[in-house]
Image (cartoon, rainbow over all chains, first blue to last red; front, side, top):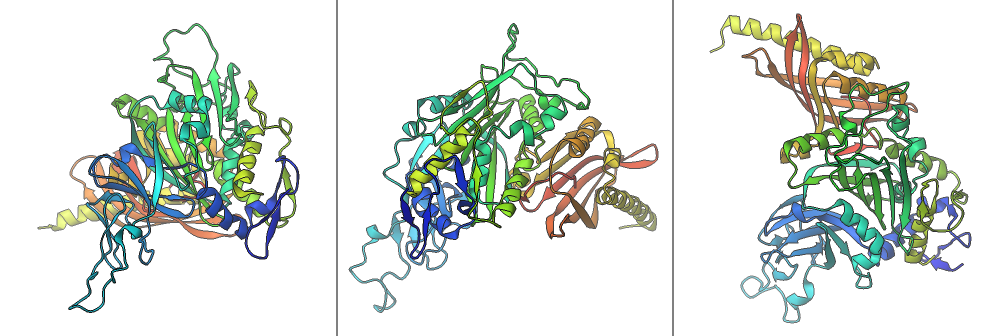
Length: 415
Length: 164
């Protein structure tokens, strides 16, 4: 396999022909991390930035990140959304340092260079000098010193961004089948119900793998089994994009004969342990089908979630080799009534940093990071479901989607 | 003008609430979590929220319990289902302020920090912020009718499983 020159004096060789073995080094190596920033996050990938509904008015902005790169997303006077690198063209200071707000223009606090809401440089303080002395010379062209613009697409209210002109349009990036599954869940205008953030003591890729790894779900997260809320009538499967980069894992109810779809409630089954209060397991079938869980990943770091009536988008931000941050944006539909708001409050007990079925995802990556760093030349193995990268109908006992992630990682990284 | 009678009443109330808060945090810090639901009324509500969401008026909580059953479920899941590296809390509570004591429901606010110590000894300031509580008397005992824990930071290190 090709040897990639990562940084001067270092090389990284992928140790096998396929992606069924993963070298520990990918989770611990600073050179690989630096390369990921340049060629993967700032390469031909789509990254979640924010929601359309978070910046409804002209001048509304939100700070976010693509990898390590600070980004600002803003709605301009025409109602169009623009995304720029949050970095002054002069001394590269952040131009926005408050997480959200409303502005008429962006002004860098350091030397008061100003930019319009499309990132064009509109003013340089003391550009003409003082009393004829100092200032800019004629060779300085304002047009050449705007903010670096990010290409965006609005996908059902999710604002996606990419640094690269090479990135295919979002719909072809993830493919028709996975685009349809986004459209299945996000059928109406959205509203934000809250934010959570969780710091993981591990490399960002361990959390991405965890999302693609449907094999672990019933083994690590034993809440459902313990309280008997998994029904044998549930079926599910894995869908993969043709590229292998993106995936969908879903489960659905198969019971037939209940016509009252809108009001149907899912109740916990009594076993050895049972829940004293089952309100958080209630499921209003609001999407016109019986899918109970849908976890969808968009390479590299976006996760779209429907767990019963808990809707969210999760954005993973790398924070150095050994740490990452997961931002949860908890969603509802704009037209939810107060009963639905209350139901979403209840079901959100299942997810987030304190979620009954998600909290373990916070610690398992740290367990791997701790164990892996002692022997970076060793490898993890991904044998479940063979070595191929293919969809799985009926069974989620496969690591196919994890292998798909590594295919995408290798293609971006050139290793 | 505060009269001596007002002050005596206020002092006695503060001592009783202070005792409630002390018993509550020792119950958690000493891992007697099965007793935790008893600190709330049967229709008690408990929310752990972030200051960000609270200030923006956004409703979603990290932990939301509404009624005794949900309190018990939090603890039984912690004991039987959820997996996490063992750790303990040390709560520090201060600056108790009585917001409203005119009716049967007394509204208070106080600050807290929680230091978390892991089984191998790593120790950190895990949480800090304030609580806004509504306390009421049931059969001569003070209980929380509502307790809203507002975390200053939105970042939770790894996970949140033990209540605050």
